Amino acid sequence: MYLVRSIIRSEKVDTVLSELFDAGFPQVTKMGVFGRGKQKGIQVGEIHYDELPKEMLLIVVKDEDKDDVVRVIMKNARTGEKGTYGDGKIFITPVETAYTISLGKEEL
Image 1 (tube, one colour):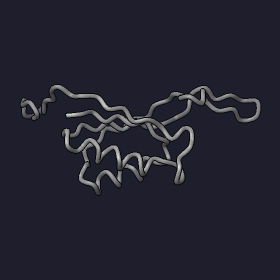
Image 2 (cartoon, helix red, strand yellow):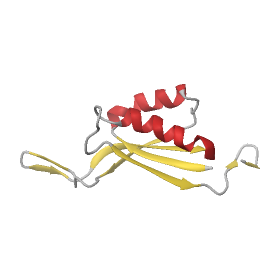
Image 3 (cartoon, one colour):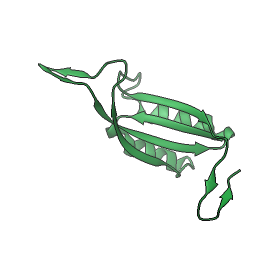
């Protein structure tokens, strides 16, 4: 299993979630986050915004589904055809074990 963690623009979340659902991946945890990437925030006039609001989506998927999930997120989180700074990042982490609390059982 893999944890696919994506940090994307807030205005792209509904589209990404809808496309993930349509692709057969409804199981998502979503949370609001603040941060900055390589662009080091944004300058608007004399005001510098050091931390920008984004959304983080967390999805645990089977090994064989990882690339499909990444493709759906990448396609739908990108701004325009080529993308732009601030579109976000996707991180992939192996998951050793997961448990369903209500059942008290390990996921396979």
